[in-house]
Length: 258
Image 1 (cartoon, helix red, strand yellow):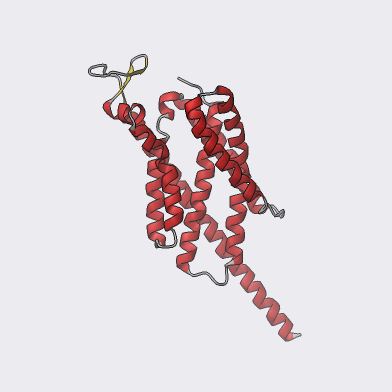
Image 2 (cartoon, rainbow, N blue to C red):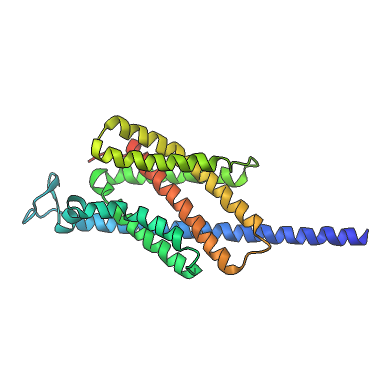
C-alpha cells in the first residue's frame, strides 16, 4: 500500500511538473508571437509613413488628394521591387523551416524577429489603402477572434489533428489562387479567397494551438532546453502566421478604403 501511495505521489509530482512546464512553454510561445506582432506593426507603420508625403515637389504618383508617394514609396509599391517585397516573407518561411535544425534557439529567435520586420514592410501598403481607424478596429476583432479560437484549441478534449492535412492543402490552394488572381484581377475570385482564407486560418489557429500543446506533452520527459526553445519559436511562428493571415483576410471585409 505504501509503495502504491509512493508511486501515485510520484506520478502526481511528474504531472504537476508537466503542467507547470506546459504553462511556461505556452507563455513563451504567446510572448514571442506578441513581440513579433509588435515588430510587424511598428515596421509597417514606419515604412508607410516614409512612403507618403504631402509635398508635391518632385512627386509623380498621387495616392489621394494632398498625398503623394515618395521615392521609397514608388520603389516599394510601383517598381519591380514590389514583387520581392510581396514574396519575401513566403521565401523566408520556407528558409526558416529548412534551417531550423541547424540554428540555435537564439538564432531561431533572431530569424523570427527579422521575418516579422520583413512581413511588416510587405504589408505596409494597407496604410495607403485603408483608413487607420478601420485597421485598428480589424486588429481588435482579429485579436478577440484569435484568442477565442486559440483558447478552444488549447482546452478542447476533441482531437483535431486530422484537420491538419486539409487545412494545409487549403493554404496551398489559397497561395496558388492568390498568385493567379494577381494577373486576373477578378473581384469574384478575390472575394472567394477572402472568405476561404478567414475559415482556413480560423481552423489553423485552433489546430496549431492544440498541436503545440500535444507536442510538448509528448516530449515533456525527453526534450532538452535547446529543443524546447526552438519548439516555442516554431509554435510562435505558426500562431503569428495564423494571426497575420486572419487579420489580412478580415481586413478585406471590415476595412474602409481611403
